[in-house]
Amino acid sequence: MAKWTPKHEAPEPLEGPVVATITGGTIVWSVLFLVQLPFYGWFDDHGHLWWLWTCLAGGGLGLIGIWYVRKRDAAIKRAAALPSASAE
Image (cartoon, rainbow, N blue to C red; front, side, top):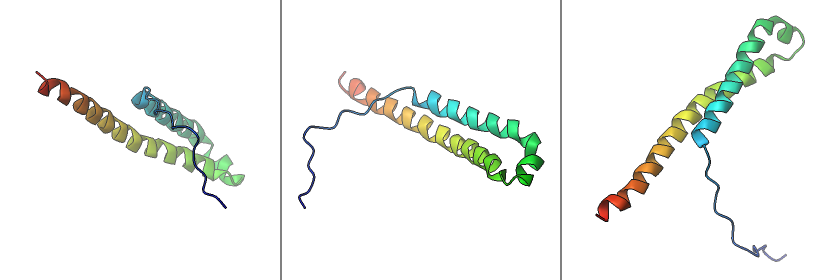
C-alpha cells in the first residue's frame, strides 16, 4: 500500500482570543459544577454522579489551561518584540 502524501500545503494555524476562550470554557465548567452540586443526592441515586465530577475536572483542568495559555501568550508577545528592538 502506497504511503499517503498531501496534495497541498497545510494552512497556517488560526490565532484567536485563546486566553478568553479557555477562560470562558473554564467558567462554564465551574458554573455547571456549582449548579449540579445541590442535586448531589439525586445524581448519586440515579448513577449519574460522574456528571458532577466531570464538571469539576473540566473546571480544574481549565485553571491549568488558563495558566498555560497566559504564559504562552506572554512568550509570543516577548518573541515578537525582540526583533523590533534589535533592529533599532
